[in-house]
Amino acid sequence: MDRSRKILIVDDEPNIVVPLQFLMEQNGYQVKIAESGEAAIDLMERFRPDLVLLDIMLPGVNGLEVCQMLREDPELKETKIVLVSALGRDVDMAKGMAMGADAYITKPFSNREIVARVNELLK
View 1 (spheres, rainbow, N blue to C red):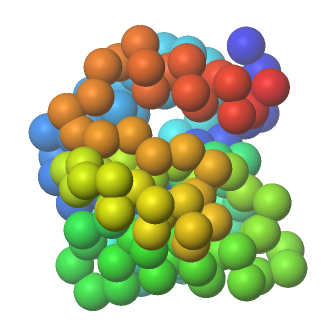
View 2: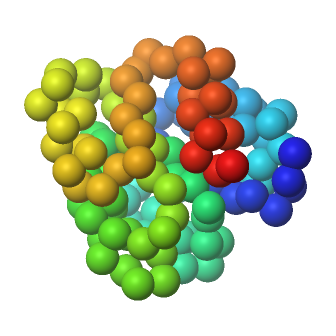
C-alpha cells in the first residue's frame, strides 16, 4: 500500500475516531484527526489529505459546510470526501452528495465497507 496517501478523519466521537484511525493506519494510510469543522479546515491547508472521512454533525462548522468549503477551494477541490454520518435518510444522503461528497456512508458502518470505499476512491 502507498504510504504517501493521507487521510483526515473529522469526527468528534472518540468511539468512531479511534477504530477508524486504527483501520486506516492498518491499511497503510497516514492519518490525522480533527474534532471540529474549524480544526479540519485548518489542518487541510497544512496536511493536504488525499481523502477526508467527514462527519456531518460537528461542533461549530458542520461537515456539509466543510465539504462546501473544500469544493470551493481551488487547491483542495480535488480532495476526495466521504461523508460518514448517523443521518441515514435519503434526503440527507442526497444533500451530502449535492454538496460535493464523493461517497456517503451511514453509521454504524462495517469496517470492510469503509476500507473498500476508501481504497476505491484512492485508486
